[in-house]
Length: 321
Image 1 (cartoon, rainbow, N blue to C red):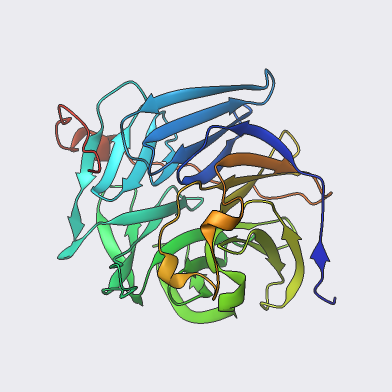
Image 2: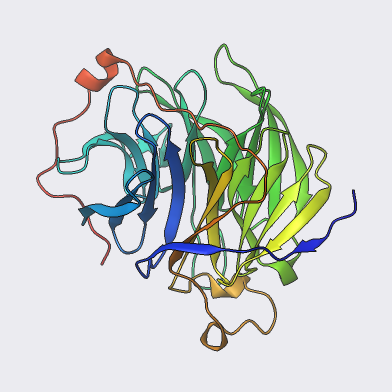
């Protein structure tokens, strides 16, 4: 199928001026959408039935998150990996693993309840120190799943879970790994597709029920859809240049929710001539329907024994300066 640009009707669900809206997650049990404003340190819930948006937390940095099977969330952020329930104190699970700092970004759980999340290190000149993809096992242990990463971002599984997709923002590519259910090991990393600088950088990912991979383009103001071989099938333009992430939601998983960001960062990676003062860059949560169904995301499932061994809660969550 020939790639094509697609204009479609968008609706704004809420516009809270998210400085870095990210990580939308459809929770089917409660028929609700959760997402985070990483930079603004706010965590949101949209009740689909009542069409109501609530701020669940203000003050704790949530970069990536997975609802826990028994309640609460597993959270990844710049200070490590946490267990947390809005209104309560976060519990630090790990600040480093195998000698490497857990400066974490997005995360995703597999069907067993393990969680994958990558680290990132980027200076003002656009130089990226070595970063890693980590695996958090259900016993609470954290392991390096892969190295040679520049800037970790979105993760998503194929419908049969044989493949994990992973976006590396600085490398401007989406990787694919073979995934092994028994122990969660990843192998045979290969490039699924590369993103040209003129189209921004790859950020959040999602997979639909047909196995096509969706990517949100930061700086690019669009979503793209790629087949399992990496060939682009379509592009959907959005008004927000800093389109950050997406997920499928709604009772039938046929709605696409898209986050965006109102504060520019990593401008050294932007397309030539990109000027954030000359266009809308983001901040709103969008929804669109195009007749494509997505996949349900998995919850994390740390064992009760792992939860009991977590460090004592901190008195006040760390904040960015």
